[in-house]
Length: 106
Image (cartoon, rainbow, N blue to C red; front, side):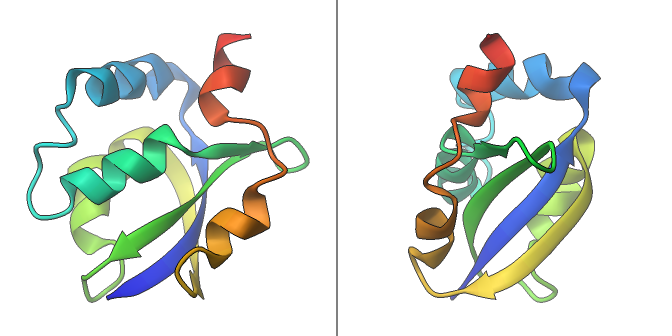
């Protein structure tokens, strides 16, 4: 298993739909990655300096995030970039940023 710090630009016109899918549990039910992706997206942060969503993602694929991208991420995000991290390192790195969802509802 690998962990990545993910940086991506949320497509503004898709933000409400993504939030709805998370709340309904639609993404959580996707196998085998739904639970991990849901957790990551629900806890995503907003980097005010770059205007990007950032989160840590647990992944089992090669290439990294292949299933997540084809099923979910490419629909809602652009310019997705990843950087390998140790478990928890990504969350620690972005903990000072506000919640993505709090920023979007303000």
